[in-house]
Each structure stands twice: as structure tokens, then as C-alpha cells.
Image (tube, rainbow, N blue to C red; front, side, top):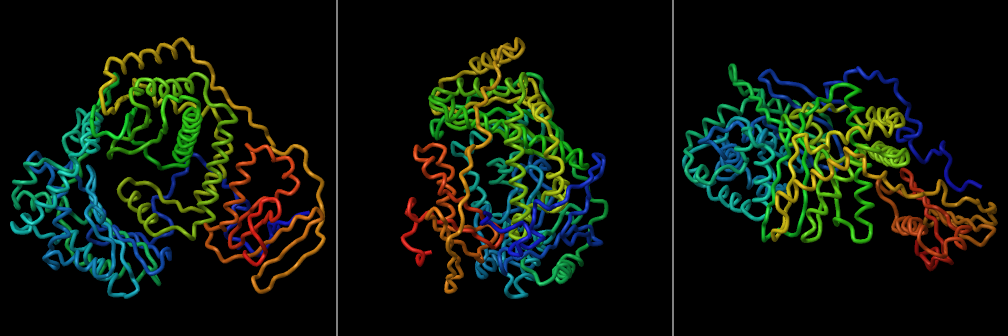
Length: 604
């Protein structure tokens, strides 16, 4: 007897179905669209790029941004820290807004504002962000005018600069804590031999204290050109064209520079021998190990590139599953460990493994981390491990597809930022869901395992330990690397001990019963079924948002997970009803007698 709604149930709008989503005929050489999908996208005559999209989450709010392809790596020696100073000056004074009028405006409309909250300067770019209400049309126009001022009208007078030195110095002192010192030291070690190593965005104290207005203005005029900028607006707009017109109104009259300088490309040299660092910091919260392997950033242009990115994601999921299981063993080598890929700077990304461990445990943690990656290189992942990852990724893309109407404006804004700054394609969740549904079943365990080759210590690798008190030396770290390399050459590492997980938890299915009575409760819109074994089931269609369930549902879902470990599973199996939540429909299953989750039906 089927108590759940059929696939054709009218409760679920057809556009939200994932299982019926058609597979696509993919050509691996097919080029992904360079034009972002689902957004009004274009360029003004003066070179400014714009992205505008209507999105109702949250209501009557808009996420705005001005992205500038200019960061600290462009600074000359006497300018170290100027890119960050310009960011501060933008909120202080422009030609139209003076005496922190921009800050006052943002605070007056209830917009988020705070130090480092509305802008960020990195090595390669500067991004200004505003999150503003749009319940009044003039608010959006004024917010866009603020971004237009940032683009070309930042005022750099001696008084303006003196007012901001204190704020910048306060931020500089804030980075001199234990965490900041460790991050800076690691950055220099990672970027050694490149200009990036000498251009931390926070800059130098002497420059912050003494830099002249002329030098700051020179940097601003040299690199802040409309051809290097994009304005992004995602929010609860009645239409996109009116927002495009606002952008043209505030930006369109600005004159583009004649032959602006090209943004230089600064490479980061590779190195065959690993670099080591034992960082001792008494204020460190605990001991940790970080392994970073650098490599060039790969372009994402074709379906084949997308498939490789998907395979890489499967590799990290599978590796992290192993790390998690190791951390749950008795007396593990670390408390937690995870691996991921991250783009560090414009030309370089890194595979990064990080673990937190007990005091005096960094050498043991390092050995365990390197051992697991070497084990993958020798034996690979098992088909079962990859099938688990495949199911997980399929579930994630299904959720993203079903919840696509619930996407927050800030998340969409960030997608378009990456499109402009990193040339990352925006193909739309519908096509991406089709791609993953098509590609995932055909990615094999051997393909996923090959990505472990990029995690070799001979591949531009940097190994760092952090300890509150020194217990490990560089020679200890080198010895561990040599030991694991030797074991790998000799193939002395045994395969991963795959745990035995049954295909089905309930092998013998209970005999189905039948419905004795069906009761309707019109006052609360619920239906109660009384089954032949005495079980009472109540279900109700709700108006929850797509990603919401009921508190009762959460309890029952937790119970289902816990039944792996309790002794009273078998007596309960014949009365256990699973919870299923669909779009705008919550089928609430109440185990009233045995579980005592409710006292009576009226309390639902």
C-alpha cells in the first residue's frame, strides 16, 4: 500500500522535478557559454561591464557590488598598502559625498556597514559590496550612485588621507595577532620568488603612516579604469531594464581612459623540493598541520573541463570521507582533517590538507595525512567509496536544483563576481544539474584516484606546522616525507580497510497491512489513517518554503539514523514509517504510541 504521493501528484510543480530532468548529449569539446545565463549582461560604451538580475530572496533587498581588477600586487615599493588605503578613502569622501556621508547614508537606510564588511582588498582585486533595501525607488538609485563615485571620484586630499590613517593603522595592528602573523608567514613561504610574496594587502606600517596624497592618487588614477570594473545588481527588482537604465545614468557619462595600462600578469615559480616551516606561537589555539601543493590555475571553458572539475570534487569528497573515519577511531592521529582546492592568486591554485591535532602530535598527524594520499596513489579508491560520493554529489545538485527559486541574492552576486574576476562560466543551475546528472554515473574510481598525483610533496609543496610550544623540527618533517616516499616506492602500504556496509538494512520486508479507517480534520487540513496493526499516521500539506521541514520531521529523521545502533530496532521495524518531505508538502509520520512524540492529534 503506497501512502506517499505518486510522481504525478499535482502537489509538486512540474518545473521542480529532478528525476524527470532529461540527460544531455554532451560533446566533451563543446565550449561552455561565455555569456552568463539568467542575468542581464553587457558593457557600456566606456568599457564598464554590468550584471543585473531580479531575485526575490530576500524580499525588498538588493545585493550590489563594484568589482575592480586592481589589488596590492600592482603596488610599487613606495605604494605598499595603498590599494587598501584607497578602499578606505572611498567610504570617507568622494566628489559628491564628503565627511563620511556615504556611511551616514548606509546607516540611515538600515544597510549593513562595518569595518571590512562592505569592501575587501586582495592581491588581485578590490570589491565594494552594498546590501540595501529597495522598498523606495530612490534608495536603489542612490546606492548605485555611491558605487559610481567609488569608480572614479574618490577624493584624496591631505585632510581625507590623515583622517583615514588611524583607521587603517588600527586594522593593521589587528592583523599582528597570532593568527595574522601565522597567515602572513605562510603566505610569504607559499609565494616565495614572486611579487605576491612582497605585496600583502595590509601593506607596510611605514607606508600607512607616511604615504603622500600624490602617491595614493597616482595609484588610483593609474588602475581604476572602467574597463577594469564591473557593477553587479541582484535584488527584488520589478524589472531588470530599469536597473540597467540606472547604471547607465550614473556610470554612462563617465569617460573611459585612452589606452589604460594592461593589468600585468605575475607568475609564481614552482619548486621541486618541498618547503618546510615550523611555526611556534604561544597564542596559537592548538597544534595544526597544513600541506599545500601549488599548481597553475586551469581554465574552465569546455564540457571536458567541467567534467575534470567534477572529478576533482569527487576526489576531495572521497579523501575527506577517509579522513573523517580515521578521526573517529580510538586515539586518532588528529582531531579533524580535511582537504580542498583553493585559488590563491590569479595564476595559482593549491590542493590543501589541514588537520588539527593534540599537542606534540604534529609529526604523527603529518605522517597519517601523507600516508593516506600515498595509499590512494598505490591502491586507488574503491568502487564503493566512489559510489557513496557519487550519490552525495547527486543529492547535492538535486537539492540545489529543487531550491533554485530560493537562491539568495548575495550568492548570485558572488557567482557573477567570479565570472568577471576569474572568467568562471555561469551556465545556470538547470543546465548544470543536467550536466552533473549526465556525467556523474560515468566517472570511474580510477579517474578520481588519479588526482592524488597532484598531492605529491615534490609538486611545489609547502608543509607547515603550528604549535604553541616547539616539539617538532624541520628535520622531523623531512624525515616523515622521506619515510612515506620510501613506503610508496616499495608499495608497502596496505589497501584501505573498507568497512562492510550491507546493501539493505531491512532484508526481510514486513507483510503489508491495510487501512482500517481514514479521518479528515478540516480545521487543520490534516488526514489521519488508522492502520491494521494499530499504527496511526497523520499527514498534511504545508506552505513551508522549499528548504523547510517540520520539527517532528527532524526528530523522526534522527531516529531513522540512530536505528543503526540501538537494540530495539527489530520490534519497531513493523511500525516504522519514514518521513518524506517534498516541495510544499510535508508528510508527517507520527509514531504516537511507541515513540510518544505527541500526546494527541490536536497538538500538531
